[in-house]
Length: 354
Image (cartoon, rainbow, N blue to C red; front, side, top):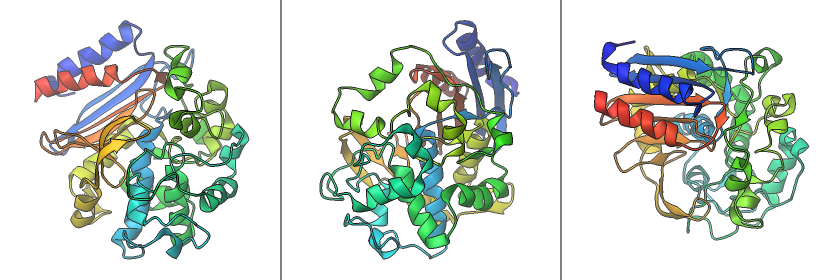
């Protein structure tokens, strides 16, 4: 690791020694090169975290799913301003592809209560969405499409391309940029997964919020998405729940954002045009988000921050983004489900090094 970034390493080790972190990976690229690559803690109770350990990074996967659809936009196969039903005729909500990608389609929650086993039934959940009425007029307001985003985006990929979003990601993006991440893991990759654990036993209840609230409806259906017995099961790891069950290494996520930061090219392999990257990272919506209950700037799949950075954090503490002004890509993948204060501290130290 470059000596300039030694304080970042020290901060990471402090998080582990204090018990605020129990297993994670941290990778940072700066000026087009990896400068920090750290792992620490445990993958399971006994096994150490390794560079190839996969963590369930929750919403960090939303931009990854979005990029699969955006690749089809870049190829001219999908028009951002076309209605969704052009490609998905059964879809009733009068939303555009752009509104789906920017969390303004009005479908922030699956409309029919479903058990945890439904995570493995793609057709059931996409049919539920196709038949749903939007909760408000598409385009009028944002609400993070917490569990639904991946099925909306992924079904558009499937309808246009024929492949599932997991297979599309593997073949068109992950393999070509050598990214260690995916939706719907095979058995061999499941054996590399970290066991997710609660940093605080009250974490699931705190994340769901008030019973019956939009947040509770969105994050609680299908059931089990905050339940360790489900999260650590072969059912969850093998399923494609692209809004929330990307399994990734920190290295895979950092490489992805390094490629986007370089306008769609990584190590000589171009996947996206500079024009597509510019549109994908431009603010599409700036206003209240009814699920997050705060002001949010949404791009096509990412959150845009006031300092000009763009990316996504996941509930539980994982996060990945690019900061064009400072010239870095950052990825933190954790199995210790808690808040984002760990990342906040690491970033504060990182910025002091730049």
